[in-house]
Amino acid sequence: QKDNDHKEVTIGFGFYSSPTYEGGKKYTTRATPFLNFKFKNISINPITGVRANFMKWENWSGGFGLGGNFGRYAKQDQYLSGIGNVSSTLESIVFAKYKAQFYSINYALYTDILQNGHKGSYLKGSLDTGFPLLDTGTFVRTSLSMTLADENYLDSFFRVSPDQSLSSGLPEYSLSPGLKDIAANLLMIYKFNNKVSLSGSLSYKELMGEVAKSPIVQRKNLFSGGISLNYRY
Image (tube, rainbow, N blue to C red):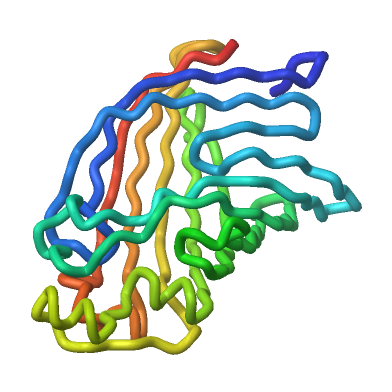
């Protein structure tokens, strides 16, 4: 549901648990504020970034945006000691969506436009579906996704260079472009009323191929999840 002026603001606060880094076996839980702002074809969200939907034709939509990649820092996990950091950076986003009655197909291409972080690109595709649970006020959304990445991106996060090998003790390792991961996601939203809702999420990700074999990866099967209380203006 949208207001007559097509404006919507949602704020929230919750807790999120995930591995200390992608491939790590330790977990961390942190408090996470949330903000989502929509006005006509513009959306602003700390997770998906700033997006502008410029294309709409029958069941297709798409556009451009900007988002942040927070990189990875050795202090996140002791296992990364000697590996060095991957700096945070700004990414361009090109996205497209096909929406049918019971499902949608989404694609988004992310590229490091500042070339001071991972310096690469990756493509994420997902198949989504959503439905209400009878008259309980609960909405369920499930999705399956996969991520493809180029050599620069994969090397930034999963390669072990000769210098990194000497300083960390891990064996040297390099990668080719290809499949990075597959994932399954579950989101449930319970509406107390038209303003207040409680949302919970659970995600399972499996690192694939050369990525899963990297010496940096301690665990290829990764779980994450969170819960938050939200208020919609």
